[in-house]
Length: 333
Image (tube, rainbow, N blue to C red):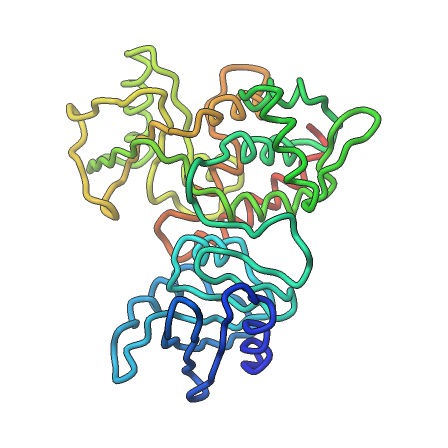
């Protein structure tokens, strides 16, 4: 990948930062802006890096004589996972040359005019907009604002406010209602911008087989009459089996006490996670994706977000499989 094109893109696409870029070697550069001087390591790649590689290379920052403060990836195109990392971590800068797009300091800039820069999770999270994106991916059939509100669990007023923000992603009004013409763009944008369900995430571990752990946790929830949804690896294994599940994830409307059969675990060591989401739309969209009975899984996009943020080197493959299965089946819903 041409480093020069990437550096030129940084200077021309991000005018508001008064950014000046100077290459100090084939692998290093300095970025000078209103925020001061930053030393960066340049990674010029023909294909976007995997999340595992980004995490590994972030661990090298601060070492050596230059003590770089950030990574600059010069790539042809960005991916959903790379965008998500760059939007969340200001140490990751992306210059997507063929797309004419730059991600820096939690903001996306593009040569193509957009309604507003896509920003990281700051201020109030637009849960309704994210739910609307999932609803528009589910089917290409036109729906009224009232139907979309029912499907997402938010008010019709919230839907009316959210729809204009999605025009650039192929969302438009037809005679029969609102449709998402570009489900791929909606999928990618959701995985890039969604900050996760927030709320409470309780981590547990057990020596039992993962399927048995999930079963026991579901039974514990049912014994307390608490609805739960399976998500993450376990849900992906049902929808588009690619890899062996690493962590079982349950979404619950209330916290579960699993101390009788599990022990608490630190982040990264859990085999079961119970999420009480702050996102109020998760259960509504799950019902929309499985309208013929009580839903048992989170919708495919929430599931994909969990997988993308899970452990394991093959998680990108699992997300791509979910994407393919979901989009291929869109016309049948």
